[in-house]
Image 1 (cartoon, rainbow, N blue to C red):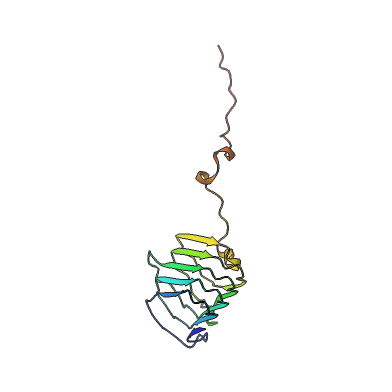
Image 2 (cartoon, rainbow, N blue to C red; image 1 turned 90 degrees about the vertical axis):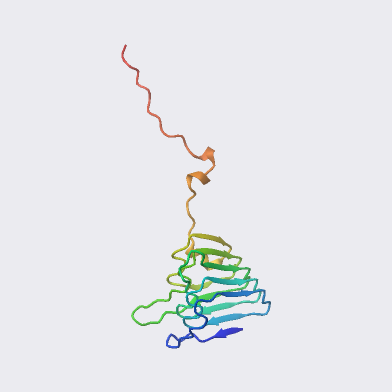
Length: 168
């Protein structure tokens, strides 16, 4: 278990400003809790190959990306993760901006994820790879294929007007 701070919005963890977080290949890790403003203005967050991770709880505005062009979120191979949440302040409707600004997103293989709460997540994504992510799928609704992506046989020809014979 990893804990930095707590979820009380009156307590500011403020750990690792302008720093990135990478948790990979930790086979016994079961939970992550980061307090308010931990990893604020980060540029990269990675949770990868964590086979026993059940919960990730992020305090108010923890993992708030810096809104830089290369900001990246990667969450892959978290087979039993079931909870991924942040908390709001409850004061004047001030909602958490956790995961608001990553521009590049890779989310894969989180099939058991059922509890998700992020009011402003993924608002500024430039590209996203999303596969088998349980409840996170609601943040990435299917997009209709563009004309370039449709098979050519499926595109009907433009309508033609009937020929009108010209008088002699």
